[in-house]
Length: 323
Length: 190
Image (cartoon, rainbow over all chains, first blue to last red):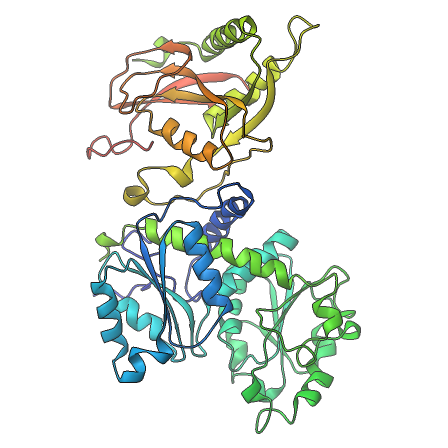
C-alpha cells in the first residue's frame, strides 16, 4: 500500500477536501480560478447552473453552525444539487448511533457528497476513508484541526484585493491555539508562496512550536502589525475568555483587540479579514469592523463561489478509479 | 488530409462575412454577436469589428453588441470528464431578453456545444431569436442543429480533430490533429 494523500485520487485530482495541509499549490489555484468563474452566476437572471443536477449533498453538522451550513447550502443549490441538512447534534448521535453507522445509513440513501462539521479532529478523514468510491467528503471544520473552505475563501479574498501572494506580509491575530481556521490558513498561505506569515497572540493562546509551520511569532501586537498587508483576525471563543487562558475579555481587547490606532501600524492599504461571527469589542473594534479597510462582508460572498468551486471539482473527479 | 490541403481560414472568414452581410442587409436586421470560447470568441470579435461598421456609411451597423459565452456549466459530459479548470467565463453585458442573437463558433460537428451555448444564453434571458454562424461545418450531427451561415462544409475523417487558430498578427488558420481519446473510443468533448 503506497502512502498517498487521501484527498487525491489515482490521477492526483481532488476527490475529498479535508485539509489545506499537503495540497499542492496547483490544486489550491485550480479551486480559486474555478471560483472566479462562478462569481458571475449570482448576477444572472437565472442564478443557477446545472452541473450537479440530480446529485444529493448531505450537510452533516455534528456541531451547530448557521453561517457555514447556509453558505454550503446556497452553493449546492446554485449548482442545482438537492441539499439535505442534518443537524445531528440533536438526532441519531444522541440516541447512541456511531459516526460511521450514521454515514452508512445516509450512503444507503444514495448520497453523492457529505459536508461534515464535527467537534472531533479527524472526523471528516474517518468518513472519507470509509465511504464508497464516487462519494466525496468536504470538511466543514473538525475540532481544532482544519477548516479548509474557510482558508480557501480567505485566499480568494486576499488574491482579489492584493492580486499576488509572493510579495505579501500576512498576520493572523488571536486564538491560534484552538483555531482550525488558523491552521488551514497557515498551510494555504505558505503553499501559495506568501513569504512572511506572522502569528500574533498571547503565549497562552499559541500552540507550542508553532514556528515549525513556517510562521514568525509575535506576542506584542504593535510590533507584529508593522507594515502588514493583510490582517486575519480570529474569533475568541467565549469559553476561552475566562480562566487559565485569559484574565477577561476587556483585558484581551486592551492588548490584542484591533482598534483603529493599532490598525494604523499596518500598511495604509492593508485589508482586515475575519471568519465571523465577530465579537465586537473583544477581538475587533466596531470602527475597524465597519471601516473602509474591512473586507469581512465580501469574504462571505466569496465563500459561496469558493464552495461552489470545491463541490463542482469534487463531483467532476472520477474517483472510481482511485488506487 | 495534409495541412496544405485545408482551406484558408481567412478566405472562409471572408465568405462568412459576405453571407451574413447579404442576408441581414436585405432584411435590415440588426443583431448582437455572441462568440463561444475560444475560437468562436475570436471570430465574433473580428465580426464585430467588420459588421458594426456601417456599409454604406449612411446606414447603421449590423452588429449592435458583442458578448462571449463559456459552455462549461452546461456541458453534457461533466459526469464523465469533470470540470477542468475554467479560465474563461461568460461575459454578456447587454440585455438578452428580446434580443436577436447571432451565435458564432469555429467548427460545428455533433452540435452538443451549440445546445450547451443555447442553454447558457437562456440563463441571461429570453432572446427574440438565435441564429448560428459557423466557419467550418464538418458534419456528424448528433442533435437537430443547423447553421444559418457557414464558411464551408467539409467531410473530414472522424479520428481527426480540426483546430482553429489565431496567430500573433491575429490571422486565422486551420490545422488538423489526431483526436484525443480516439484510440480508447472516447467521444470528443462537446
